Length: 143
Image 1 (cartoon, rainbow, N blue to C red):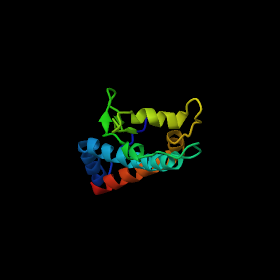
Image 2: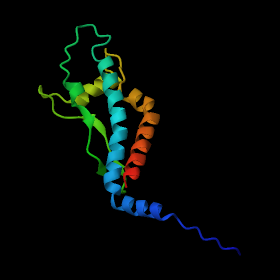
Image 3: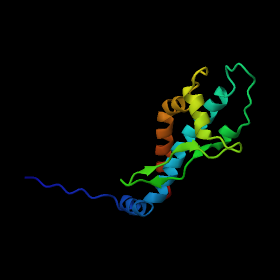
Image 4: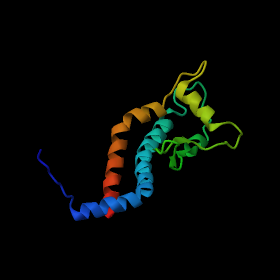
């Protein structure tokens, strides 16, 4: 049986070892880059939906839109890194931002659904992945 030995270039080995030391740090930056893409789309969609097609003049205060943001990157039990898009709580009036967003997204009796999160998720999938790949390449290039 033939035997082949493949040796990696020395500079690649050094980068891989540095990457190992900074995996947590780089993973957070990569996820944040992807999360920002989705966040921008969700905020834009929300702006378009608030006050649209209502019987009465919109009473929007902008509080829902300003509460939309990204969570810090967390590591779950399985060791996977996660970042979440969500709303800060509570509102000044005591109501829940998540409840109001849910009513806008899915509607309620007498109020049609005006989705803004699901379309943002669908439309940004490729751009999000591309942003994360670009950020990873940028971070690896710095090593």
